Length: 151
Length: 469
Image (cartoon, one colour):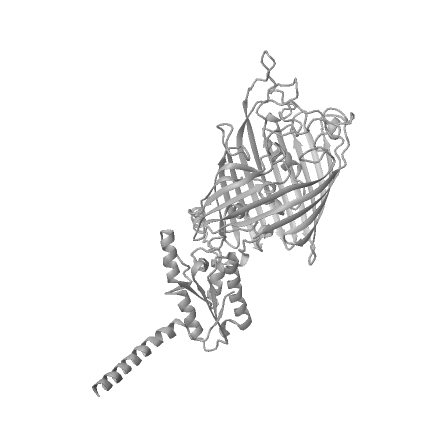
């Protein structure tokens, strides 16, 4: 009995803990109830043309579905993080897309590694949200129903 | 070269704008607003890489193959001199030539650090860079740019100095085949040989003696030195650019041949309408100057044994100019005026700048290019026919060589051109040049007119192919 009670108590506490953590995840992925298309765009390549391409894809999604009916997040990690460097030559386009609702996520692990390599802190675009791990962020979004595209 | 620089006017729209509270505030704001702008701003296209989005090493280059036919007449004795023969070899009046074949690498030193970029370019074509000395290849650019200070980027090494539009622009997007008279003769520097070198007499074709008496490469509008520069966006899509440079004044040569240094200054203001790359739409006003000295033995002196004496002197070499360029909706117009004082190149067969044998008196300024002056201008325009690959071009240029001196020669040319673009990187150009020369202080057939009277038309065809990763 005692064991059973403790088991139930732990189960309740666990459920509370899970319940408590769920809103955090929900806050990380904004709810856009009218969004018909949800995309997570991955950029992890060094190639500068990929930067242009991923921004073009985001723009095309907005153009086709409209800002209110689309939900787009660009996740940058590895060499692709250069897209979100402060002062990147695409800063103007990033700002424009962000103003239209596109979100940008920068991988903290990559920032740490690049900072170690450079010997100074990597500064990222203020439009970007720093996430603990780019790949983890992608999984979160995919689990939430987003379609992963790697242009 | 610059077609990967994708910055557009739309992005410029979103750049930081400046509250013009006063001249000092404007200057300070400009410094703050320094942005990595590119497009047809040659300072930025050639000297910088896109911030955070450049390659570690981007291989690129271009090839230009051409055919030219010169219909000029010889002098009364049947002799030819430039510009009646096809350069750079000057052996004939019709020639196929691979006049440019360049390969280069550019990028950032480290992908994570866009603050430092580099530019290297090698010339392997047959032209004034490689023909003197029969070089297989010659390095034309090798520079590193430091972008750490907003408003004061620093470029060091061998590269194009800030100057006239024709010289500063990327040659593979030049809309004509040959330079204007004034650019070719007054700006494209020929460096004196170490020792006085007598003139080469007009030759029948093929010439018995090479008609080019210069031993060194042309300057190719380049110098080894240090340049401080940047570009600033302000107001409603305006861009202000500046550059200041100090260099050897010794062209493509890696080191200097004297202690004198050349100084260069450049200022440009452009209203930008849109587009990107070398054909960005805008209206640009620009002015430039360069000042330096050249050390040359132009005196025909010999010792008692008849051996030439090395007797160098210093001569000023100053150039300046201003102009404007317009490009919008397929229409292009350019005008530029230039003047030069000192070291006025006369011809490939005058390697001592016009001092002929026995006339070795540097104070004889009638024909001495070392002390001569020059001035010239060009106006040109083009129209890209909508929805076709065709463009038509028209240019008129003049150059007064040894301006104000007895041996002044006035060169005039009208160039009628057409281009067909197979795609943005491959095109063929056809030019017909109506040319004439005249020494106004002499009658027909007399003095310099004995040579220049026969200058006649040129037809030229050129294929340009650009490749880039």
